[in-house]
Image 1 (spheres, rainbow, N blue to C red):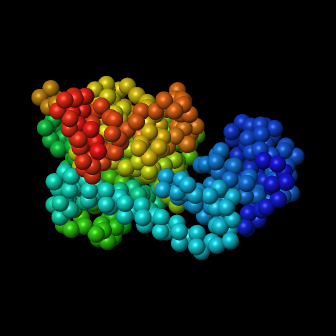
Image 2: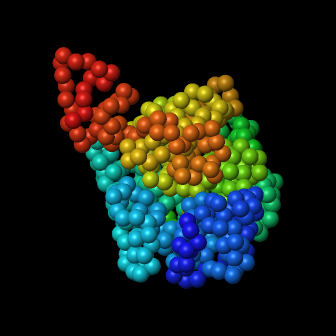
Image 3: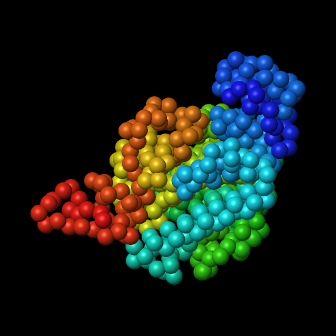
Length: 475
């Protein structure tokens, strides 16, 4: 990128010398190395860092591409619009549109039209997701009216982006007030007693419920077999129910759910959300996660949480203006059922039936406490880096089987440099990726040897004289 191409500034002139210099130093780069990455001269970079010249559109684009999590926070309204447009245009639907420069000019010259385009694309994405839900329900023999309450709540969180601003900010404010990291079990119990008159006891019965709250007596009883991280989460859940009662009721009351059971389940889910936000406050957790390159084990040590809790919290970092890496997260049991799922990426999970058998998460279920990594590619050509780990939750008794499952966390390959688990993966090599789908009923791949069912929207062809691994061909 020649210096002559740098003359066109952002629609609103952006002087960000201090931020640019700090960004360079945080990444351990000298001016020559930084200038080479940006495709500009060292003297031009020096002028930018000294605020002698504003950051131009090509430089801003280069910064957003090389440092997507760091630079987007420095963008102004026009820069934010450009970033949103770049994300939308990454949709394979627009693969044959014009070059980026034409897009930049269109956004700068017609910002209102760009905003309407972004809203239209977001509405189209939501409509596509709802259509996918209906297709899966029909394919699985489950009509929309027959959705169970927990399925309604699951889809509510999905369509909400797995981020609830009012509750997340309230939990973060309380965590700042308590000013402790990690938030210890004793402190939470003290706050429960001091503010709400609640006593905490451990049950002497191994078969007792994990958590039981006696409202009349103000008594919270926790199962003796709970691991420390689960005890802390249970205490945080109870504190959230009492501290954020009105906020939870407001969100649940406004939700478009069919039954009272679903609204009650949503209230419980929102209290769990608040507990995670209390133990892992948004800004502090996001900053630490980025500094550690999203190393889950180290995050668990810093915040005193479980592996699953840390993974789940990473998938909720979608606060406008301060987003984390867009992750997908899921939990899969021994039978292949997806019991938790959320995706802030273009990858979406099957809502009925099992997930694609080629996902590494299925192998991880059988190998507890070992992290597996995978580079995967979906039928639309998007690549993802993901890690999966098998976990065992002890029951506390030989008479009760422990719960075995696996969790998976991943992001699009564009963010591989920020995700420590991608370090050993060759994200650029064409043959390195495992071809995966959402589920067999929705996957269009005609040549998958692991296919359990044909796609629901295509005919099959059966040749009685030919037998392959799959006994039919997809039309």
